[in-house]
Length: 166
Image (cartoon, rainbow, N blue to C red; front, side, top):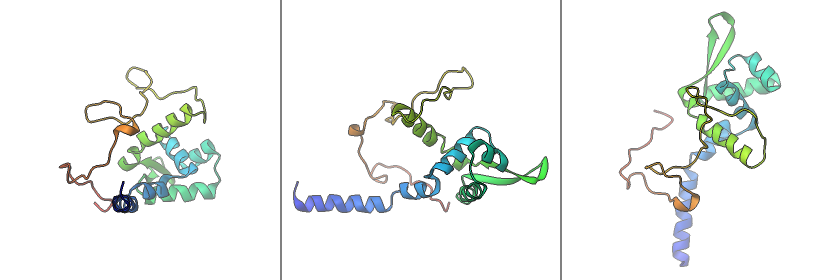
């Protein structure tokens, strides 16, 4: 590989890295308590007290993380219709979109020895465990890292993605 091509490849990589959505996503949800709060919300926790008791988290940290997730559009905060003094935290569609992320992280942790849960996520209809998360081709084939490449959305004729402002 020539020096000019290597420099060009590195410049393209740097440009893509600077506009990559991963750092912003990690800033919003990439710490332990945020993931545990999400896990709690996916499992039906709704009230501050439920999150605190279920996670064993300090009140100030829980309050901060809930506020951050609400500000980021992951959770919404509403008055509890049964008790107007209480607040219900619920997942937004944006928050529900994190289910595959949380599940993939859990499956990765189990596979690599970071916990062995006796309870697995199952399809409510038939009670069978869900399949392992994987990267799939457009036709459903499972792909490995070596089978992947980055392409330009426009060159591939793909529609632009929505932005956070939309």
